[in-house]
Amino acid sequence: MLDTANRTIFDEELNLFRDQVRKFYDRALVPNLDRWEEEGVVDREFWRACGEAGLLCPQVPAEYGGLGLDYRYNTVIGEELTYAGSSAGITLQSDIVVDYIINYGSEEQKKKWLPGMVSGEVITAIAMTEPGAGSDLQGVRTSAKRDGNHYVINGSKTYITNGQNADLIVVVAKTDPDKGAKGTSLILVEADRAGFKRGRNLDKIGQNSADTSELFFEDVRVPITNCLGEENRGFAYLMNQLPQERLQIASAAQAGAQRAFDEAVKFTKERKAFKQTVFDFQNTRFTLAALKAKLQAGWAHLDWCIERHLRKELTAAEASAAKLFHTELQWEACDTSLQLHGGAGYMNEYPIARMWRDARVQRIYGGTSEIMKEVVARSI
Image 1 (spheres, one colour):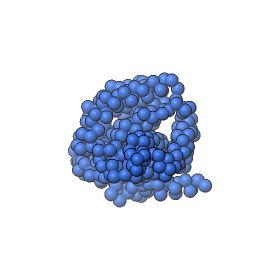
Image 2 (image 1 turned 90 degrees about the horizontal axis):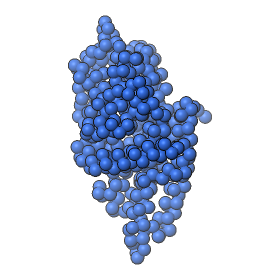
Image 3 (image 1 turned 120 degrees about the vertical axis):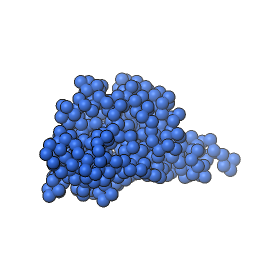
Image 4 (image 1 turned 180 degrees about the horizontal axis):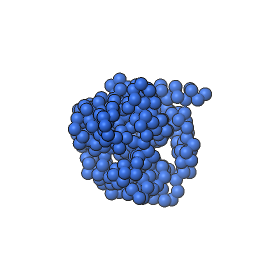
């Protein structure tokens, strides 16, 4: 269980909320983890159960069916999800996609989509990455050309979380290719539109229960009113939302690092070797001590970032630094924990094996560690 006793950003109400989240995951999530890993997708029933429990998009205003809560509640949901060992895509909906609609959507779009996103009846995805464009979103080639009062969308996307389940996709497309990044728009595409097709559920080395897909758009027609915000302002919107996206990844990474550490402590204190526990060896204790020091600093830094984000002061460089630090820490913690498990760590029956696999992509999506260094370097 995550120890939050010394964290200063949570009050009694949030602690009670965290307790409710834990109990919900113990009941509705943990018993299904292995099955979802095998099936490669999380049941839609779980999404609806999350909605009923108030765990989807808690920041949505009350007039659209939400609870109107601050980002700390998102943090609790995401931390506990990762600590429980799940890669379910609910945080993508709650921490990333929904804020595009809240911040840039028309009143009609908000009324149409937000209530379903809160209840879990509507599952969303955001389609940024393409076969030839990953961290560099300026390289997007998917096009959306005006034809009367419609856009005609052509192109393909890949590595799209929630791609198999999604009812609504926020598509990053070029509406004016001659303007480069300044010709990018965000367009809402319903999954039942003619010409839209889902590719295969991609075979990944980790996060197997998070459905990740190729998406194809062949002359997909959507009304001009499906444009999210202003036409050709999409790249600016993406940049505005990146700090929260990277903070969410950092938060999940810190929780994942803590869980890996806790698994290592538990295993080494139980495992015997040479007539003593593995924990009794100085190398084990010193390795864990060094990791605990980094975790202590990590939690303090994460809470600092969350406080700045609540005040709308977290910069792109600070969020990038947070993603860099915490995802690298998660990988170190998972790899160290697996090593301390010895041969058992390589067996899928132990939680650390899944955690190690799932952690690897954290240093890639949302901007690679190398790109994070570049963003931070530009701020120096």
